Image 1 (spheres, rainbow over the protein chains, first blue to last red):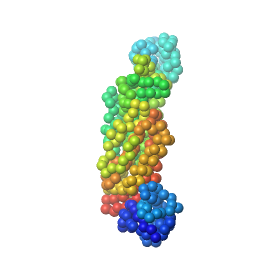
Image 2 (cartoon, rainbow over the protein chains, first blue to last red):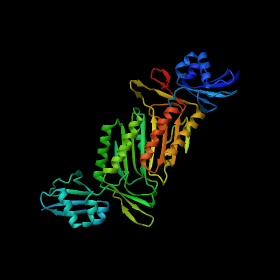
Image 3 (tube, helix red, strand yellow):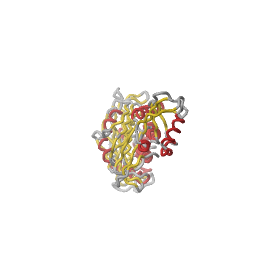
Image 4 (spheres, rainbow over the protein chains, first blue to last red):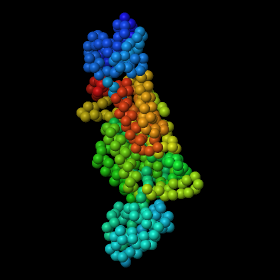
Amino acid sequence: MIKIFVLFFAGARDIVGHSRLEIEIPKASSIGQLREILLARFPRLENLASRAAFAVNESFALPDKVLFENDEVAFLPPVSGG
Amino acid sequence: MIKIFVLFFAGARDIVGHSRLEIEIPKASSIGQLREILLARFPRLENLASRAAFAVNESFALPDKVLFENDEVAFLPPVSGG
Amino acid sequence: MRIKLTRDPIDHQEMVENCRTKSTGAIVLFLGTVREITGNNQTLSLEYDAFAPLAEKSLTEIAEEAKSSWPIREIEIIHRLGTIQPGETSIAICLSCPHRADAFSACQQIMDKIKKVVPIWKKETSPHGVSNWIHP
Amino acid sequence: MRIKLTRDPIDHQEMVENCRTKSTGAIVLFLGTVREITGNNQTLSLEYDAFAPLAEKSLTEIAEEAKSSWPIREIEIIHRLGTIQPGETSIAICLSCPHRADAFSACQQIMDKIKKVVPIWKKETSPHGVSNWIHP
């Protein structure tokens, strides 16, 4: 297992109750696999998770990106700036 | 004959040498006929006259508009505002 | 609605604040400014002249027409006359609409119309002192 | 080029002056402002939150991309964060181009892109005190 950090924003932060969570995931997990782990733990994230984008260490990242120890993953629900 | 006034702007004013001219024209002349009268008197207006718009008493007017005593006609060469 | 010809510098800050409303989500301000270089030609200054009463009437008609085509809440158009220098504003159009697509489209089409029909003319002075009225 | 997230009111006057150049003939300023009424919903205030480092990076990328697509000379984008009231500016984009068609088109497409990808979110508070994050 490796330790990573997940950042939550806006509606996702309200559902999770934290803006930053430390999480343990299996080594070599992808962002897509992290999404499943988050959904298992926070089922109410489902609506946002299916439409969320992700960033790793402050860069946008695709679901197949593999995560490493201490990575900081941002869970980005659909945006509404402007 | 009737007396009218013609206003000239920009390049047309430079050619004519006046910003306002009093001119005598035959009764019931149209703007189109006035244009011919002006061209006869100021041949160098030709290039601008073929592309000019006209206004009578501060309203745009078409070439077939008939002129009356004391009308004030504006000779409007192609515009370049903005 | 405010339509104005002026010999003074144009205050775009005031125009934007006049167009700000609580019922609109978009303000678009367009400024036409004097370019020093166009192609190979250098411009020292521009002089704008107008048939003022008809120019104001024509600008007002263009603004009214735009208000009937787009949901414009506030609109101001100011055109500068007299001599102006490179960098300065010759025309400013500001308007507000509920949504941005309308605001962009209205502002752009108003500007296109103004350049076609409003009786205003500019004279370009080059650095060699040559001046020419522009009749496109 | 200036890209900024800020909790202070946005000074659009300064943005326009920063974008004014002698080599450009067109400045377009877009302001997104808070609407009090949208359809049947009334908005008391909006609260904007962002993943700030990525939002600034993303805005910078959008501006750089635009500079490679249009002849933009100067560009500034400022997005407000925190709580803002109806009528206030939430985002401002200002840019200058040699000609107006490019300036309008660049500004509009930059705004469209920002609304799609930049990690900024708004929470609407209705007069009944109900607050909702907007996730379109």
